[in-house]
Image 1 (tube, rainbow, N blue to C red):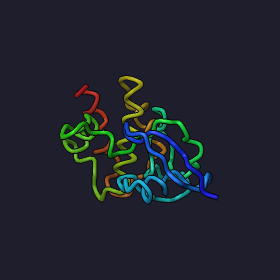
Image 2: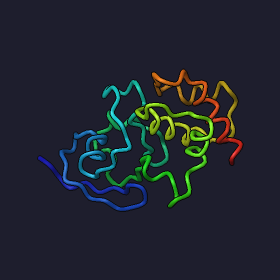
Image 3: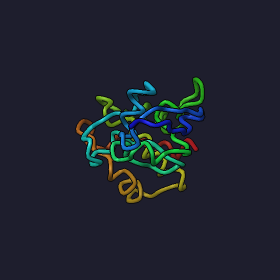
Image 4: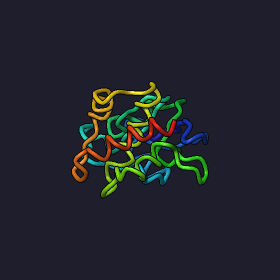
Length: 153
């Protein structure tokens, strides 16, 4: 049976009526109409559905919505501040790190989580993005975007 589940999304307290085992991804996209978070594989393999829960990167296709009760969830829609892009978003634009757009929100969320730990070397960037798949760019521009975001700090 559906139940009321309360959590914060992009700084706004929200209450949703959902089955406790409903995927966070579906609740975000269907009930909250935040469609920036994408579904790629539905199995936690591609990273397209990446969001931050209490500051930690998760694949929202694997997280039951009940698990985020009382938590702070940040989606791609909550990254920019008004008209000011987040430095990672700006870097992806400057470096051409986005192609078709399916993986981009998850890549940006993974990059934000990675850069919150501080500056990274090339291997740390590769490791930090290893849970995200892109079939368009060949990763060169994505890696350049993360390096650029470190410069913008």
